[in-house]
Every structure is written in structure tokens, then in C-alpha cells.
Length: 159
Image 1 (spheres, rainbow, N blue to C red):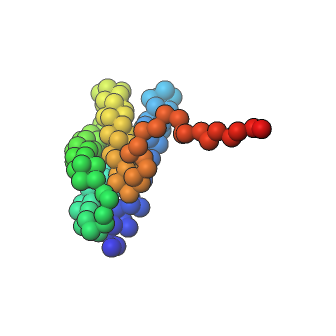
Image 2: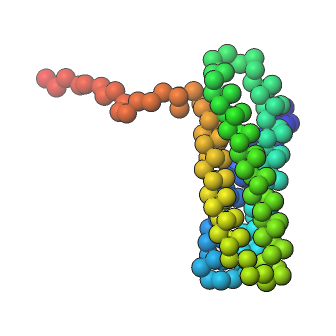
Image 3: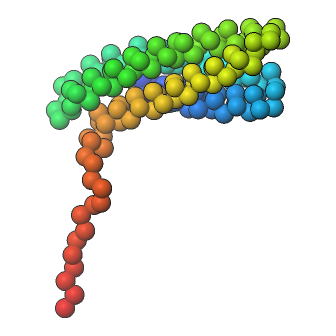
């Protein structure tokens, strides 16, 4: 049960880490501030580590809910699929962030190019992680699976 709690708690780190890191990186690119870019890279590295933890605690989370009736196997498999893709892209983000960290600290001429590339990867990470999180929400919150454009209205007869 502990790994399930870790999975649910740590899920927020990659989502918000990629979003916050992206905002910090945009600010660093705009202001041409290497320390700000380095702060963003550190956020991305922490987020990538968090994504690894979330992925590897997912199996225990799945085992803890397998005996609960009413859960969709399709939703669980989709969540697992998007989680795998998210992990791979987060690993890429972590690796290029470490590279960007060293390039930026050394004042290399490729610093601007790598910052823009890392921002693009961070945007992809955010989108994939958001999709994965929404799929995870649908596992336990089955009301999210129903698409109802407008709730039914009760008609009250006035006499």
C-alpha cells in the first residue's frame, strides 16, 4: 500500500515540475540569464527523477486496485501506455537537461540552441504527463468517463 501512496503523491511532481520548469526556462531565455536557465534545468532533472519513481511505483498501484469491481481494464492499459511514453520522454528531458547544465555553465555558444530544444522537450513532457494523469484520474473517478455536454434539467411545472 505504501508504494500506491507514493505513486499517487509523486504523480504531481512531473506534471508541475515540467510546467514550472518550462516557465522558468522561458524567463531565462527571454532575459538571457544563465543562472535562471540552470534553475530550470535543475527542475527538469528533479522532475525526471520523479517521473521514474512514479513509473516504478505504478505496478504496485495497479495491484492494489485489481480486485476492485467496476474499473476499466482499457483505461488502466491506456494509463500504463501513456505512462511508459511519458517516462521515456522524461528520461530524454533529464539527459538533455544535464547536458544543458554543463553547456550553460561553460558558456558554450550552443547554450541558446540547447535551451530552446529543452523547452520543446519540456512542452512535450507536460502534454504527455497531463494526458497520463487524466487517464489515471479516470481509473478511480469513473464519472469522468461519461461525456455529457449538459446535465439533464429538472422541469418544474408552475401552476
